[in-house]
Length: 361
Ligand SMILES: Nc1ncnc2c1ncn2[C@@H]1O[C@H](COP(=O)(O)OP(=O)(O)OP(=O)(O)O)[C@@H](O)[C@H]1O
Image 1 (cartoon, rainbow, N blue to C red):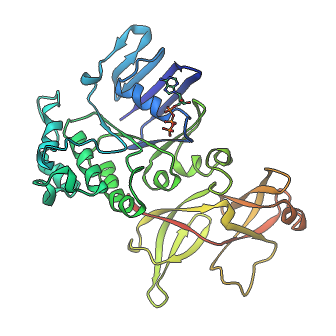
Image 2: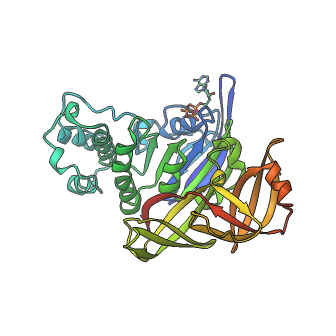
């Protein structure tokens, strides 16, 4: 499954000039507000006609301006989930779902209603009206409705943005199942790094209407080009981890990563499962020697690869820990005191690890 986007488009003073290809099951468009994410989604959905370019999904050309191809939106077989579900208030959940069905242009329905109801856990909600649903439930119905239109591509534009943290946590496993089980590629807009860390199989990093990077989340989200995008406090490193051991006495799990072992509060995933963790650069301290007698459980050995002075006070240090890059943000004063230079052996003390508990295959 291949998604090709190659577009030039002017919107007032803003120019979108993007080119990327993705074979990912869930391609995340990630960037700050105003970077052009929604504009891309609207072009793929067919709500906007680009000045110039090509959009193709799995061999089907939706737009090719040079060859005067512009498939109208109702013929694109593109499902769309908005920030708020936009369900029909007067229809039950069941009828809202079936509405998506009616609009499917595909004669042979590939996706069964029962399958979608099971996938999204909607069975007990079918007779209810949207007014009685929680925000997360509404979004699940909206996703189900989009799936039942038999899309060749599903667009999700900040689908969790209007939900609180609890509801977000509730709905994330459903989006993971959708990603892993339905065989429909998803183009997913978000400016939340935690969401992208957990869900994306490919990340397209956008800034001011341009693509800064495309690739695996671990490469794109860990790069120093993330600093201006997410801000100093949020940049960091995404690590792929495997659950190696559980310590029931202290309620801890040991995760094996390429950079070394990490001990974290016990995770739900069983031994052998894989998951992703995110270490913020500002949660990494550096030490010349392996520290003793501190409460932090996680110390990784490595060497300095690169030092970037972000300002007069702050330095971003890139470390190599067992072949894995790790970003650390320290004060310039400490960098000088530690005599940091490329190739200096160093120990990284990890103050906190953000766990993205989605199991991955
Ligand atoms: N119809 C339009 N006319 C003029 N400018 C537009 C139009 N549509 C979008 N823009 C501008 O294009 C830029 C990109 O907007 P877009 O909504 O694509 O960004 P975004 O990354 O999705 O942001 P957000 O996360 O805030 O939704 C913005 O500067 C916006 O003001």
